[in-house]
Length: 398
Image 1 (cartoon, one colour):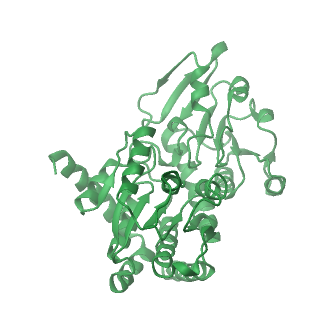
Image 2: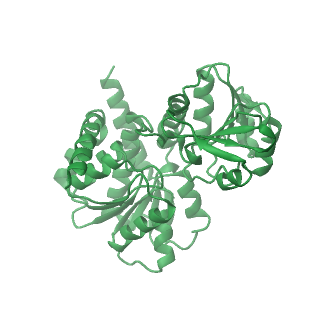
């Protein structure tokens, strides 16, 4: 390794040490897997945010005998964590500065290694397998996100010749990670990146799924004035009964000061919205894919833009016709994984979420025949076992 890589690896190791010390569920799983080694003889191909908590997950899978070939997701890879994982002998592709084409090439490199199990985030790996045709060596995999689950049940439906457990279908993940951890981390990231206050500020949250619920509730808990945009009548009904203003996006375009998308779907903020939005509004996204804000369309109608110095590398002022401007955070990518050293979701939530990943991957490796082909929820017995472990861990800390 070069001196720079050594320094990066050392920095990454120090960050992982802290994270590892606060993830007791994975620590217990690591001990158990080191004895049972359910992944011995299996190569796991991964596409997941490469940050310190993910490094602890990879260590846990490696303790169970897995050979790992990994890449990150577009725009969220942390170079010190890549250097640390490589120093541990893992094959890892990608860097923070990779563009979308480079990300797709990294995904292809993971698939070129012919993994037998996939750990996917956004269904990029599964989509790559489907595009290539048959992959008889793959016995199954997992999918982390709402967006990936939607792809598996939408554009990829009926084309996946192996089981994929959708971690996001777990009610444990929905409550612990999506509502509370994403809600907390998005609000914390907004404050960290912009240094703006929440109390009294007018926020519009697009989407009232589990992540949108969390963002809305945490903003209100800190004193924000919050409105919700939701096309599903039942979710809109819930948001109204939770005490939020519910309205159409265009009706809120001049009212809102900060707009946060949390839908998982493309083209939520587009040209008609940009033409109507109030001067100085802040635009941010916390969905997995950077497609909820039409960034290309925004730049096409812009009269000029510039990155603002001293703003954690994640703030862009975009000037619009008529003397107006908007502020775009993190180039429309996941704002809670933006900036120079992002924190992402809380340690406790990812300890729970990554235990869901670990036990689901263990089920894929050891009992594939109990699973059906294509997307499916986390088996109920795994959900309940993890709930018991989490409750024990929480009670032990009282």
